[in-house]
Image 1: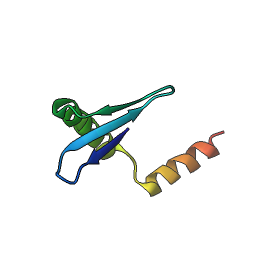
Image 2: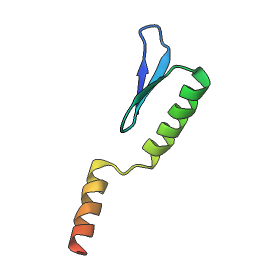
Image 3: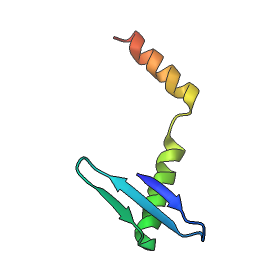
Image 4: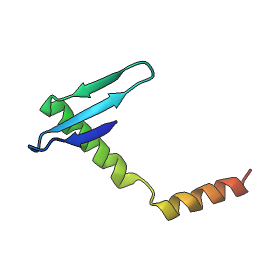
Length: 61
């Protein structure tokens, strides 16, 4: 999924699946996708934390 902003400030989203892509321009739907993306981003590990997690999991194998 990509969230894009046009030169006039309108946000649109592009979602791609295995066999197709979809451009989403409905403001309510794009707003919901932005909220979900922000939630995921806020919960994601930073680069060092991701590296440390992978190293820890590798050591457990």
